[in-house]
Amino acid sequence: MNNTNREKEAYSLIHSKATSNAAVQGLSGFIGYPYTFIADGVTIFTHFVDMYNKIRILYGREPSNEQIITKLIVGLHKEVLFDIAGDKILGNVPVIGIYFNAICAKTLTWRLGILFTMLASGGKDYNIESITKSVELIRNVFPQNDAFTFKQPSYENFEMIVMSVENNTVSDFERKITEALKCFAM
Image (cartoon, rainbow, N blue to C red; front, side, top):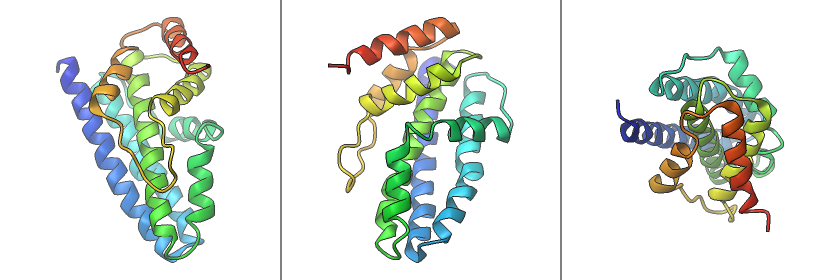
């Protein structure tokens, strides 16, 4: 499979998971607490673990076990804090929570999907420092500046960020991410 097809398939997969996750989270927001927490727990396995492994397979990488992926997602809590906070504060209010849960679910799914694609494209190894910086870069490249709307990342920008780290060593991957972040440190 050539590179462009992999990126297109990854983008399509992320879009599908974001749409599905928004529906699941939106339904949980209809009822509110505690169903929003149950939906969060379920989607880790049905959406994020599945998406991570399917993207890894697209790039010729071995799938990972659920504990590694869960640890990766939980380790990013500081970088995805707004998504989680918006989801947990506004999303637990019955009926009103439908909308906020759906927006937060799409945002979080896209950010994680882009991260998973960057990691799979980048190489078979990566370190935690690179992951945290990558999420920060994703947040800057694909900002969600309005809590009331969701702006889907364009395919062109997705392809550009993924291909910029393709087949790198761990140190080259981190160097590229660090250099890209300097553009946003003004």
